[in-house]
Image 1 (tube, rainbow, N blue to C red):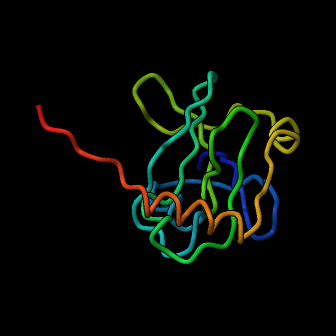
Image 2 (tube, rainbow, N blue to C red; image 1 turned 90 degrees about the vertical axis):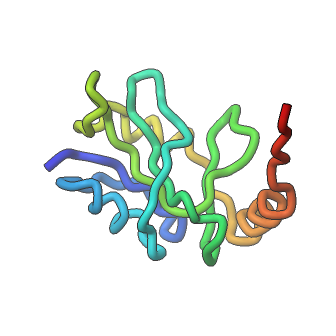
Image 3 (cartoon, rainbow, N blue to C red; image 1 turned 30 degrees about the vertical axis):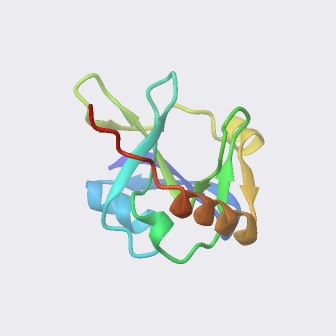
Length: 126
């Protein structure tokens, strides 16, 4: 089992969890997650995993950090990564993350959800 961190947008907490198989990430993210993406990788190679289809589901809240242009919607898992791309124990300092993470309300998260869904990226063919 590998140590990971769970960012829970409902409880507004960051806690340590265990991940033995990638499907454990689905369970920790919750809300029916069965596909995840990694939108953020820290310098220490820790990665944030979120529900890839989270914008299409009921929104419970979100979170952001300084310098981000928009919040991530829904719960997230932070896990480390080795040179081969395998999951390992996280390296980030949990207390430092607790100071940096800013939770956003359900209403703010829903507003970002609407913006994201109403402004789908345009595909340009050359």
